[in-house]
Amino acid sequence: ESGEECDDGNINNGDGCNEICQLEFCPSGHTDNHNGTCTATLTSIIEDGNVFNQSGWRKNTSDVYLNMGKRVGTNWIVHRSYIEWNTSSIPDNATIQDSHFIYSGGYQINSEIRNLTSEPSITNPKTIFDEIKSGIEYPTPNAFPFPQFPDVDLGPTADYHIQQKLPLNWFAFGMKSINENVSSASWVNSNESTITPKPTLIVTYTPKSGCGNGWVDISEQFDDGNTQDGD
Image 1 (cartoon, rainbow, N blue to C red):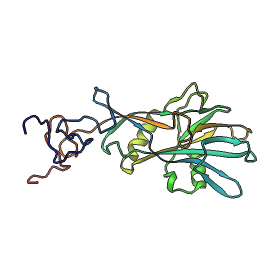
Image 2 (image 1 turned 60 degrees about the vertical axis):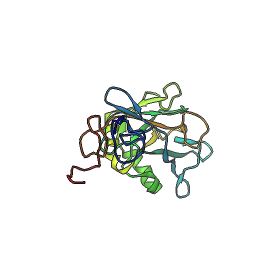
Image 3 (image 1 turned 45 degrees about the vertical axis):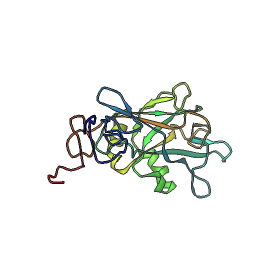
Image 4 (image 1 turned 135 degrees about the vertical axis):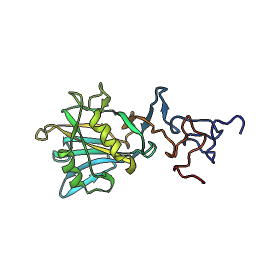
């Protein structure tokens, strides 16, 4: 109709054609970088927590600290931690360009970030603990987690892992101390903490364009998610 740039048969925002039938480049809540990319600031955490063996394998998802190393007050038991984000707001067919981890925390001993292949929220603590050690390491500053460096570029390997898991709607990584023999620990403030910033995943991506992708692109008036005629 007159005045419309598109019409996708609904008045929903965030699907390429907004409630007033004007084209959108990025999903609702994501930043249009005006260079062909969008940025998602993900703070929706499915689960974060600590895993450790204290008279049996345990998972603590209510602690305000995500610990790495031997924690005082628990008989110096080795703790490893993890964060699992909800990535469902990023289109499954997007191409990931960059990813950053924003955090607040405290530094006593250098720690590292590693890939997790299993979804922590549905995985037993021993498996998570072991996977954190065996997972691929992502780049981290020389001192992590250090309040002066609250932004970690996770690197191209993490970008690839986020890409792989887009259809699953989650991405997670684990954190551990580099030297777990030392009686010392560092920490990242968890989603349960009142300290900000809370664990945040910043993802920049390129939306996939083309007829049949379910997204109303700039050159389209309508996209129903397929390339069938007569519908």
